Length: 145
Image (tube, rainbow, N blue to C red; front, side, top):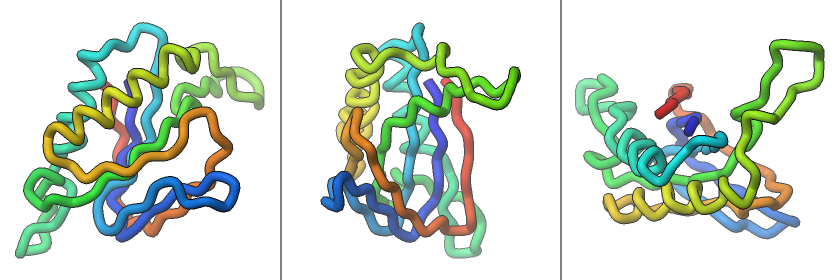
C-alpha cells in the first residue's frame, strides 16, 4: 500500500458539488492499493499515518504526530499512486488493484485510524472527486508499507 501524506491547514473533497469530506488542521492522505496488499498492510499504513511526526512542537520542530495533536484526517482513495510512467507518455495502471479489492482495504485504513482515535473524513470510492487543500508547510511525504 502507498500513502501520500500532506500536512494541511484544511482540506475537503466534493462529489458533484456536494462536500462529502472536510477537515481542519491535520493530514490529507491519498491511499493507493496494489494487487498483493492485505488488511495487515492497511493496519500498518494507518499506524504509520497516526504516529508520523510531521506536526510542530512548541519549538517549531516536527516532533508531534496526529496521535499527539488529536488532528483530523481526510482519506481519499487514489489508484493513480500506482501509475507507471517508465514507458511512453501515458501512465499504465496495471499495478493498481481492482476496485473490488482496493475499496475494502481503503475502508480498513479508515477503520483502523478511527480505532486509534482519529477523527476521519473520507472521499467517495469510484466517484469523480474534487480535492481542495491548503498544504501546511508545505509538508508532503510518500509512505509505502
